[in-house]
Image (tube, rainbow, N blue to C red; front, side, top):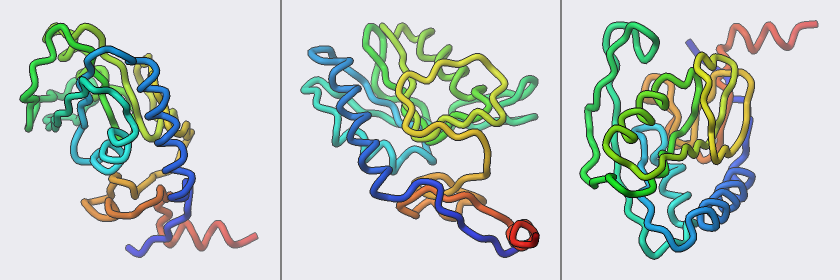
Length: 184
């Protein structure tokens, strides 16, 4: 099925906001060791841009990846790590960096896991804070852009492993819907 890509957040706007987030995070953790954790695969572009803007001499970085079985990350499903952290987070501040926070189940799982490993604090940073399908009460500490709806791709976010490389965020509009929207 062919699709239309409708720009939601252009590259210049993304980069400006990422620099602002980096400054906010730098100020929040000033003088304190910090472990920035990238949730793969979707957050990798955002994470790379973000950590270059975080000014912290004690910054450590690491990566993790989740796998979900039997119902995704929704209730009843089982979530596990397909790539776990290598850095010990016990007694350290942790910044969890996501591409998009949607239902909130994956982030809640990670918050519980990191707290259980003895993290001093865990805060969430996301490029897109999407409320359309939020199912859990979850605080996003550093949000790039709030969105209410739409299936988005680009800037690390994908559809069937496609579109990750795009330098902006787009809404993926199936062609049949795109044509229907143009009709009066």
